[in-house]
Image (tube, rainbow, N blue to C red):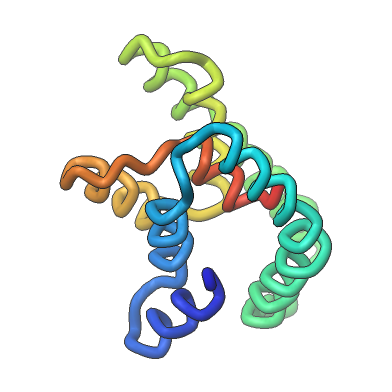
Length: 143
């Protein structure tokens, strides 16, 4: 269902993340049903869908030939970017007195998805859609 909604959205020119958010809104709120569904979909998402998405994202990236110095600097820049996003999200969470776990989840989402999806999450919550950050983390990571 998520794939169909995401594919339909992408055919119309929207980001595929909308399908995940729509599926999260449709996800049952009862604890036992949610746990049972999450357990049933764990292996499908983790073993089948996540590698497909990662491979598809990898094939769309063009890396031009770099000289030797650039190959040594690029991992350092990447590490600084990942740590900076994570530290910034945790600092913002502590400033607003949110739990540390929520800050770490937001930092994870910033590293995995990007700023546009975080803004979309904020707008959906501001307009009355109750999307749990923990459920979005489960959908994003397949865990």
